[in-house]
Image (tube, rainbow, N blue to C red):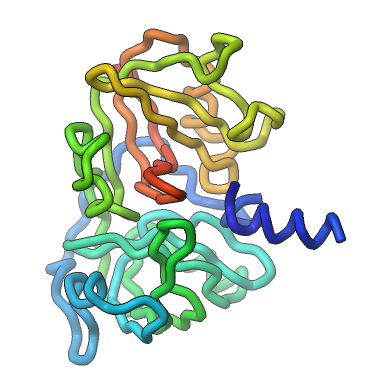
Length: 252
C-alpha cells in the first residue's frame, strides 16, 4: 500500500504516493549531462552527507536535480531528485501545474523543508523550492550485487540498475506480472513482477503514475515471460524494505 492510496481510501470510505498529473515516462537509460559539479553546494546548503546525518523532523536545505517527476495533483508535486552523492525524494511540494511543467529532468532546484520518514522511506516534506542555474542527469548505478544486503539502503531514492536478473512467477497463477500488489487491479494500475538473483527472489513495481500504461516500460513488463533474463533501471523507493519503481526493462 502507498501513502496517498491509503489516505484517499480512508477519505472515500468514511493511488499511490502520487496523484493524477502526468509523470516522467523515461523508459531508457539516461545520458549524463553534466555542466557543473553536481556535488558542489552553495553557502548554507547541506551536503548529502550532512542531510543523511540530519535527524528526522528537522529542517533541511539542499540543492538537487530533478531526475523523475512522479506526480502533480492538488497543486502539489512529488519528485525524485539527485545530486552527485545521493538521492532526495520530495513529497507533495506545493506548486502550480505550470510550474511543475517547467521542472524538466536535469533541472537544478534549491529546496527547503523537513526531513521525514514513512514506512522506511526518507523524504522531504512541507517544502518550498526555487530553480537555480545548472543541469545534471545521473547515470543509473548498478546495485545488482547489493540486493539482499544491508548496503542496498545506501542507494535509497537514487537511479539504480539491476543487471541480468531472471523473471519469476508473480503469483500462484504463474503469470509474469500482476495488477496491483495483490492482483486486484486492471489495465492502467500499478504492475508488480518478481525477479531472482542468485536464488533469491525480489518484487519490483512499475508505478502507473510515474510510468503509465502508454509508456515503453509498462508495455515491456506486460510482455515478460517467466524465465526471461532482463536488465532493469528505476528509482530505489522504499516501503517496509526495498520497493524499486522501475522505469526501463530491456532484454539482458
